[in-house]
Amino acid sequence: MEEKSITHEDSLKIIESMIETAKKKVTRLDSYYSLMWGYLVLIASLLNYYLLTAGYGQKASYAWFLMFIGGLASIWISIRRNKERKVRTYFDKVLFYLWMGFIICIFIVVFNGKYISYQITPLILLLYGIALLVNGGIFNFKPQIIGAVVAWIGCFIAFRLEYKDQLLVEAAVVFISYIIPGHLLYNMAQKDV
Amino acid sequence: MFKELDPIIHSQLRLAVMSILAGVESAEFVYLKEKTNATAGNLSVQLEKLQQAGYISIEKTFKGKYPLTLCKITLAGAEAFKKYVNDLQSYIKP
Image (tube, rainbow over all chains, first blue to last red):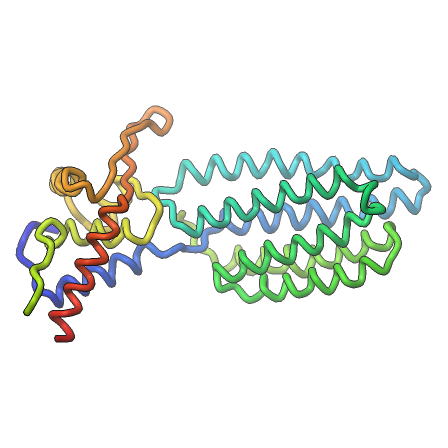
């Protein structure tokens, strides 16, 4: 663009086209979080369920150490993202704080399990619901909004079940709310960042 | 009576830059260059003008080994942009 005088109509066109160009675009990296956490939580829930059935008792919950792999991989994805990203939208900022808050809430719930009769799974499903609703709302991505409703239905059901059976509900919820939207997001996302 | 449009914003490239920065938290120099199709030299000069007016802040850091120029709109810049758009509307819809 060269320096030249512009008309008022030109001004409007410039504003319109530039604002359009800077909108948040869904990229494949966005789908990686959904897919990775979806599959990890699915495997951990089913593994925990299997180990409980096989009589491992409390040791069965070691299945959740898989979450540390997820944590490390998330850090790696976010570093890669920051390297490739040339613009930071307010959506990026909102999503960062949303998921950060989500993780902190999960830690609080897990570490205070004994004070809430170990009703950890339903509370995590409740939190999933909020995070998915906001995430889906920002992207205008219906599968995640439906996923939020599914998470809350799962929460309702899980409160009425024993710990072992809650794991099956959690597995079903992550499959519907994370894995399916994750694959859809991957397919519709643009390759560029 | 028409209001005079802010001359600092009322130029093709500076307006383009302000429009982008008004909608994002921050943008790199290369991103602005890519989106506006401007030359690096011209963009630098226009960014400098916007910075001197206090409309944008420019932060120079490094991304690994490479220099990184990060631009953000300031509060004054956001206000000026809002006023520019309002003034523009008075021309279009008198």
